[in-house]
Amino acid sequence: MNNFLQARRAGLLMLALSMAVLPLLMVNSFHYDIAIMIGINAIVCVGLNLLIGYAGQVSLGHAGFFALGAYASTILTDSYGWPSIVAMLAGALLVGVLSFIVARPILRLKGHYLAMGTLGMGIIISIILNQEVDLTGGPDGMPVPSFVIFGWEPYGNQVWYWIVAIALFISVVVALNIVESPIGRALRSLHGSELAAGTMGVDTLRFKVLIFVVSAVMASLAGSLFAHYSGFLTPTEGDFFRSIEFVTMVVLGGMASTFGAVIGAAILTILPQILAAFHDYEMMMHGLVLMGIMIFMRKGLVPTISGWLRRKPS
Image (cartoon, rainbow, N blue to C red):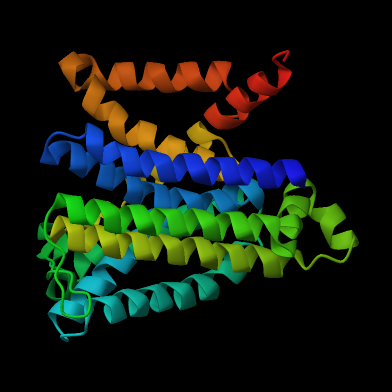
């Protein structure tokens, strides 16, 4: 436990220092835009890692929750005049209720059946967002009202950077507290062996539903931040490929590693920008990089590197 607390404090300190130093290295709005998108993606991945990495439950539909939070916040502020914060929280509540309703039947499935169930859920959400033209603008999308906090409207990438950075830091702290709590121990037990966990008295379905709802709400809040920051929203944010991108970020950084989820989100957000110089070979290089990491670092970046450092003689 002491080692866990030391690693947690060190990780939080490094995250805070990185957030504080990063603005000194960014020289234009494009750099800020990438940093903000890293933060938004990382919030989703931190929650998704609780579900996949700790509970061992695959979800291929979390982009749907991300998009629902974004659209709920947008519609409530634009069409009904709700304050931005209230709309964001209402969107998170809506997603929380929806995820709770679908979680119990879906999470009774296992393995490939569970993956297909969550995939189907995400596809349904994507179809609704595309078809409800009067409500969502359909494939053409819709503009998003400005984000207002108690009469103050954040303006500029620097301000948005700090909003997203604070939100990411809070999400990491919340995730670490869950992992350290009895809930986290229950999640790890059912990941190791759901049958054994049930035999020991763990209500496996209850904990799976709980963490599914928590991860969905975190995705919803990230979606609301994305909507107000970008200023325009399209249904592509909730499609299947976006869900796969989130899962890949979690796996790449290292499952059952909260800080790994942040690293994975950062790498896969930056990587396409770096590989753009290869033009027609961009996707091929992207695939080769991911294949190389997963072949030589099968547990993901952070767990593998941590293992190397622990084995290194002092």
